[in-house]
Amino acid sequence: MSNSKRRDIPHYTTPLIETHCHLDYLDQEQLTQTLVRSREVGIERIVTIAVSAANLDRVFALTRFADDIWGTQGIHPHEAECYDSAVAETIRERGTDPRIVAVGEIGLDYFYDHADRAVQRRVFAEQLALAVELDLPVVIHTREADDDTRAILAEFAPNLARKGVIHSFTSSLELAEFCLDRGFMLGFNGITTFNRADNVRAAVALTPLDQLVLETDSPYLTPVPYRGRPNAPFYLPFVAERVAEVKQLPVEDLLAAAHRNSLALFFADEPG
Image 1 (spheres, rainbow, N blue to C red):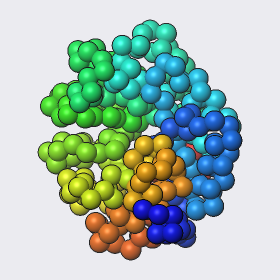
Image 2 (cartoon, one colour; image 1 turned 45 degrees about the vertical axis):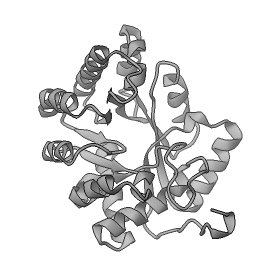
Image 3 (cartoon, one colour; image 1 turned 90 degrees about the horizontal axis):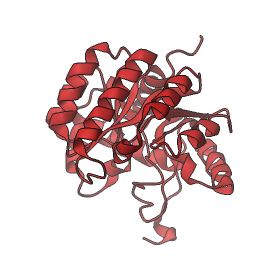
Image 4 (cartoon, rainbow, N blue to C red; image 1 turned 180 degrees about the horizontal axis):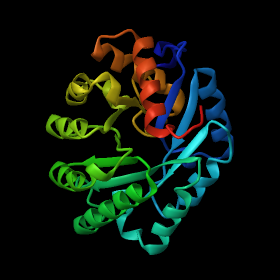
């Protein structure tokens, strides 16, 4: 698609919250430009996500870079084998910081199998226990691991007062129903705009309006009409439009619900 066919990014009245991206992938100039463009299209808050022992510090530092950046601390299943007592203690200590809003990105990934599955399960469970201890929500990644995700969440969900989000949801409707029934939210991103993503749009249709949040997972999963370019939080309005279309709602109504949900999920401790 040529640049001439790409329409401008829409700017809606209701502010947006980017609930999942990876700002630590950007250099200083890219970060500054991304924040400027995101603010211009109404992105009010950005949650940048930790994934490994190597980027815990960088994500934490980013929460000090600008007032509209918050972060998480956690170890992705790809990096499960780097999880040890020192990493756990870092997550525990930083989990009390007001700019850290969740334990994540944690979970299981049996598609790539970058880490031993038994290790993934143990590390997922240990980080869920940390979230219970810290009274924080969780940001969960699950891919081709529905049964084990369900089994582990069945154990921990009752004690997770803040629950969390299954981000970039692409799993079965059965897992969606299981998670929704236990109070989790589902996160949807640019995949909802992809031609062959009927399964994800079915999950959007299934999800109650008060249990969905919007994300980009940038720099990955750039939505139509900007596929082929690196993703960024400022493309979030395109995700909102597609989700609103599936939900058969005006975009502003969808954005208002997603904004309420995001605040409830990550920012419930704020005064006022």
